[in-house]
Image (tube, rainbow, N blue to C red):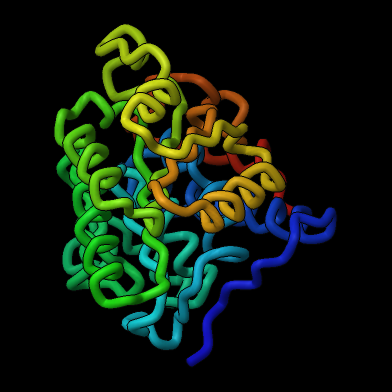
Amino acid sequence: MSDTSTNKAAEPAEAERLSRMASQVREDIINTLAESKSGHPGGSLSCTDILVSLYFSKLRHDPKNPKWPDRDRFLLSKGHAAPALYSVLAEAGYFPKEELKTLRKINSRLQGHPDPNKLPGIEIPGGPEGIGLSEGVGMAAAAKLDGSQIKIYVLMGDGELDEGEVWEAAMAAVKFRLDNLIAIVDMNGLQQEGATSEIMPTASIADKFRAFNWNVLEINGHDIPAILSALDRACKHSGAPTAIIASTVKGKGVGFMEGKVEYHAKTLSQDAVQKALESIKVD
């Protein structure tokens, strides 16, 4: 059975390849949201570099056989960032890129939140905030029982860490020594109504995971070599799950959106779309 992972070292050429891919995915996100006239640009753009690094360099997966039993599992817990995941899946070949234009339309396979019953490459129905880590714990525990070597990756937003369920799952992951579980926190500092530090202050997220006895790595979530290095280290760690705390910028790559809470969910005007695409500048 084939897979699309490369596991290359973060050499300059590899980092450049992934950086260009990330720019293309950002362009796809903007065009997709422009077509749908709804959706979540800010959080989709903040996690783009993470998703591209995973899908095009680290994740064991096969677009031609989405249900391959030995695939790694990627769970998008922050389901509102579906435009980013859809764009990455389309670039990877899970479905035609032309279908991105159907986002949020009636009878489309690309719903506002991912639906595993509609679209290949989707593992869980993102939606209820905080649920992804619990589902990841279940999958990781099942893989251990089966003697499987697969990895389970869960991408969470920092806003959803307000949910108590996240911390219950964090305790269980350590109790069962789920070192095949890798949680990635897209820490862009903003959620729907404002700054995470004001809505429900969580102090140091990294220290919280350390207090739960997780292996913790802190990185710049837009530094592709740093992302790849962290993923490598997480995969090699044994005895405990790993949390990668990735500092990111909401709306990354589109200057006028960066760090702006209003772009959590905002319809883009034609002028805004044009400005955004000029800001990304895919060659």
